[in-house]
Length: 175
Image 1 (cartoon, rainbow, N blue to C red):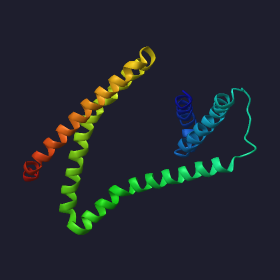
Image 2: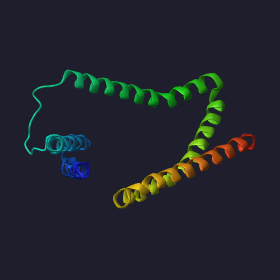
Image 3: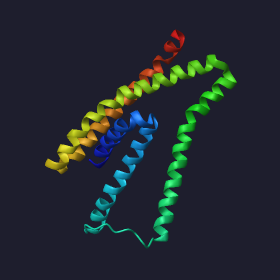
Image 4: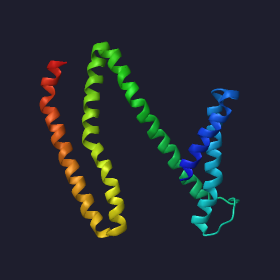
């Protein structure tokens, strides 16, 4: 709710200031959005963590906790950076070694696999409301529903990937 309200605030700030500041108004809106999230989020975190409703700032820091948080954040950023660089690096190698023809074939094959994956995985998003309802009404039922849905999606994914593997020579011939 905080993020949604802050997003509406960002849009309002950008719209109000756009005539005067142009594209910089969008950046100003993002700054206002992040400040609003911090100013509203901090009291909520304090209340959840301590049960008190006052705006306390942390004056003492636990070095071990800070070291763990910073280490986790750095590792997470390294993984994100590596995953962001994977596709451009792969495409660069394909174009450098095999030329644009090989890059085009790689791109089509990659898109085909991603489209099949989306086709198989996207219906699982519709299960989230069912899980939410089951967690409220009957918590014992949620394991059964989760197990069945994972088995069904896994079976469909396996069948789809086997079918794609079997059809790949024909697809390659068409390409």
